[in-house]
Amino acid sequence: VNRHESRKRELALARLYCDAAARRELRAHPERFAARHGLEEHELRGFDLEGLEHAAASFAAKRRQRHASPMSRLARIRHFLHRILHP
Amino acid sequence: VAAAEDAVAAAAERDRIGLAWRPELAAGLHEAMAFVDALEVIADNWFHASSRELSALAALGAERPLLLHGVGMGLASAFPVARGRAEAMARLVERVRPAAWSEHLAFVRAGDLEIGHLAAPPRSAETIEGTLENLERVRRVVGSPPWLENVATLVDPPFSSLTETAWTARVFRDGDADMLLDLHNLYANALNFRTDPFAMLREMPLERVRGVHLSGGRWTDHESGGRPRLLDDHLHDPPDAVYDLLTALARDAPQPLFVIIERDGCYPAMDSLLLQIGRARAALATGRAARQPDVRQAA
Image (tube, rainbow over all chains, first blue to last red; front, side):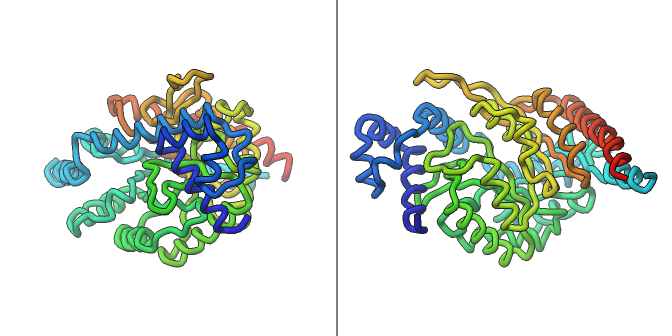
């Protein structure tokens, strides 16, 4: 497998982690998913589909958590500096 | 024999146990610094800090050994690490002069698609090659190599042809890098994929370990059903097994270790975190003491 193939696999994997529609397609029509991502269908055999859902849910939660953080990064730093400079 | 025992004792004395610094912990930490040997900060949060803010961080580093922990490079990938990210780390390292800096053996994006967190890469010869190239790339830009951290995963990474330990051992062997061993990540992966965590620990390149992370997690029960998996969420205390793994590591790895307790939310009182530091210290001491007979035998 050359570098190009390896990148295609990472792109497909990142899509599966981020996109519920891609995961549905993988389950229902693996041949279409493979064709869409330039992969061979046999490469998709034996996927840990259950784990994929767990991982995707975890990544989605992390993304939500980041966006919903009540304290911005800058505010956190200001908070820290205030504590250090004005103990 | 006495010299060998002295060497083990000296390593134990040089072990450092500390906390991952978070803004929410700052106030309590200020009062508890006497019990904390080292601190770790998320490097990416400081890439755009002002000069004044960096001076405060450097001052903190002057007080205790400071570790910079990167989360965004995505070293374990066939895609090259963006030069800008490596340069940002280089500037921070230059400014703060940490005891070490670290990054994960993870991919976090593919092309323009951001996953949003640390994903275990396909464990294959190709991703080893990509990881080594990225390692060399950042080593050149930053001026020193990162400690590389193993990651937790809820999915057995697709497109893999190697086990986690085989993949990891080859990266460290060929990359000549040091390791930040996250014992809860190891524990979670072992349980999720039905491996003995202590056997897994023994297969890791223990002679490369310089840093250790301790944290906790919870069992997930995804709506799609199936068996639950252990999620490394940094919101819970380290389980007993993680301290047992630390003891085993201290027994099998004679070099001094930086041990950092990580927490990213649901923060307990500082007293509780100090108790965890105490438990880590005791676990290390037990492991160091268990090593003594081995050393005597070898001598």
